[in-house]
Length: 320
Image (cartoon, rainbow, N blue to C red; front, side, top):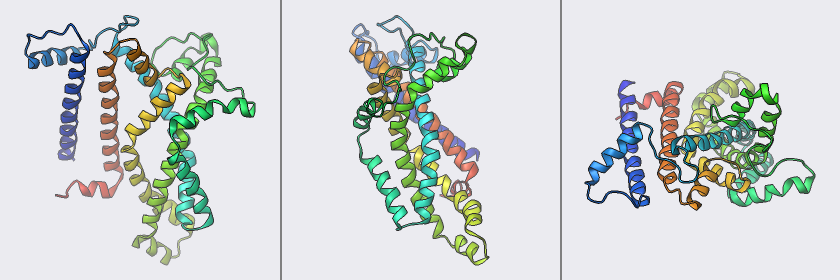
């Protein structure tokens, strides 16, 4: 266990070093006033000292600290990803289970056809089409912005849904529901892709588990389908799904940033795009460190949780 943790932390430190080097190069390239007569190793040491102290520079747009602006923007992106992931899980896992249990049936073909469409459609195109949806069907959903300008919600946690709840003494729950309304369409677009991916992964995992010998033994012992599915199939099928979704973290966040730009949702995508347009190039290395660092940490945490939950993962700790 400790050896496994050491290996994961060692991997984290190596990746973190590579990320900081990339961020340093981008910072040095974007800073025209950087000293040229100082050794690069010395400059990197000074850069790392500033990073560790939280001094990431000031924005040229509003003179606000880059670190706080980046974290606030990324929190909005994580909020969108979380809502989309919960929605996709509720939709995708049951459909994937049905497709896996009824493989090569009409139900399976129907579910997988929808999933393949979700995987094939470009996310930005679907987001643009979705902005027209309220007008087509007569819905009164907002299609741009993160929250109505009439609400001045103080930034406390960076997560607007949480901050709007904390401001309930001012706006009751109006700000919270307004923020939620602004997230419905962007989350629907992202969850459509996620649902398709979860359906595909769940179907494959269910199919593999159903072919296992212990499932055949469970049928031979007279267990019913619901008992087999709940006791054995889901227990062994879910960990591989989580593992594969862990590998999709960067793709999910990238899609979320693209969707934010289409819907003018104030997240990491809009923050990074507006910073580049305004010549605030310090946002580039900050985005590299914040987003990549969050993906690395999340990946390792998920890997450790899977190791705790999955017997097969624990067994792999002792493999050469």
